[in-house]
Length: 261
Length: 263
Image 1 (cartoon, rainbow over the protein chains, first blue to last red):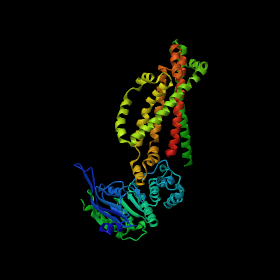
Image 2 (tube, rainbow over the protein chains, first blue to last red):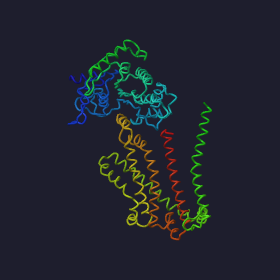
Image 3 (cartoon, rainbow over the protein chains, first blue to last red):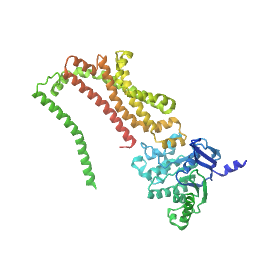
């Protein structure tokens, strides 16, 4: 084994000296400058940073939807050159098909992947029941609230059983109360599904509550300036956000982000 | 709570009755005033026949009028269907081939500005005096809204949804059929409403130039004999044909909205 192979074997998701430059040339924008980031199998890591720091760009490169200008992205030891079905993706917007029911929206990836929809029907219903939508299986997105739609989107990202789940600020468009609810929903789901997770957010509280580890990114060009382990046991209840220790961690991360200015 | 709901339903059903009644009332009032004025003035009936005379002309010429519906309606519908299919094909081509779009789209937009009626005699020259020239001309004038709206519709699909499809390793064809096309359907429907009207115009213009049958032809024949009541009766029949086609498409669009979850 070469050094690089050892490095890859240890990390389920690995970004190795990744650089991303948009419009190379005179008007170029350096979005990311030599990012190293690794997520072990079953670990939940948050990328925390100000808007425009390139954290979403990093996530899209890990999803295989963008290619790095330099450096390499590996998932499961294999370089990411194009999207793969062992990776699931969630966006800020639920991006549901407006003409399909919740159940059919959850089964959408199964149709795309040409798997047997009947076989996955039960899994889809179980997931929707798990997030409290058993009464809304046949409702269309227009009949659901914002939080419900994002619940459907979580189920859709999990139904085809990807090993890695990438989430791009999935709850940032929701109101504060719904957002806290969704954090708990995701926390509980994680307990059962045990994926490797990478979560992009600009909410410190959300990052600390959900993650095993929080990576803080600097403003553009993005670099990782802090790598912090969150000590709380799983499963976590949302009440921990009121504890002194939780707030101390949040305060520390806040000071790290503020030190940028 | 129930009483509020009940009042709302009642007032909304009242409102829909009013919506239907008000335009009908206006229409028949104008007919009434028209009828009244022609009784008390001696305006020549060859210039403006009274509504009752038009009604009489419809009764007297019933078989002549009805037998001329089909030649006009069938060519208009045929032109519309061809325009829809070809227009759809072209907009798909332009969505997936950047080169085709860059070469074709500015030309289509440019052509759209030209008054297309002016081309009608040329179609007769090229395609002859039979139905082919009218069909060709109907396609020609009704295809533009289809191409332009459908291209816009296919382009306007939510880009994040396309990203989702990409991340799920969807093929281009899957993304087209499962996402892009359904998203563009409302655009297609509104373009079709415009297109069917234009196809009717195309056929009538064609009939004015060459035809031996059809409602447009009937208008010209009646014009030659100064039978103004028959002319207006033919126009009325054209209105019915147009309304029939339009309501077919409106119904299709309603079904579509239900399917989309908008209603």
